[in-house]
Image 1 (spheres, rainbow, N blue to C red):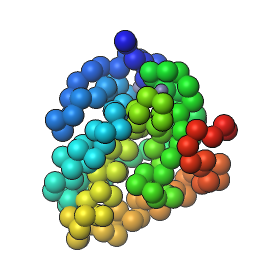
Image 2 (spheres, protein in one colour):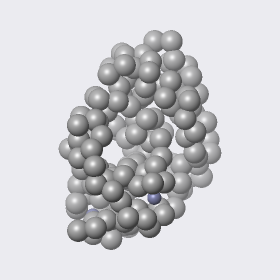
Image 3 (cartoon, helix red, strand yellow):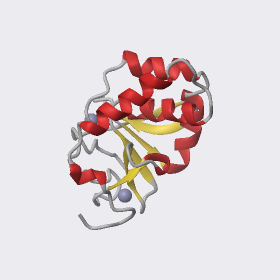
Length: 152
Ligand SMILES: [Zn+2]
Ligand SMILES: [Zn+2]
C-alpha cells in the first residue's frame, strides 16, 4: 500500500539503504521497520569518525515536536527515547513496528551508536555538543515522553 510522509504528505519511495528495505521521502525523512534499525546503524557507523563527520557536515534541524501519524495505520506514533536515552527521541508505531526518522536523525543515531560501541575518539565532545544543543531546543513537553501507547 502506498505510504505518505507524516511530515510533508509526499508519497514515500520504497528503496534500500545500508542493505535494509525502507521508505524515503524527498524531504529527507525515513520510514523503516524496527528490526532494520540496528542493521542500518551498523552500516552507517562502521567508520565511527566518518559517521560523526557526516553529522557535523549536515544540517541537523531542531527536533520537530509536532505529533505525527503512522504512515501505515494512521494512528498517532509514540515518541520514545532512542536506545533508552532521555535526550534523543524517535517516533515509532508499536502496532506496525515502524520507526520514523526525521532528516539527519539516522545520522545522529548512527553517531551515537558508534560512540556506544567505542568507534569514535576524536569527535566525542563534538557529538555531545550536538546532542546537548538539540535537547536545549526542545520544549519540556517531550522531555518526559510516555513509554508506549500512551495517549497524549
Ligand atoms: Zn516528507
Ligand atoms: Zn502503525
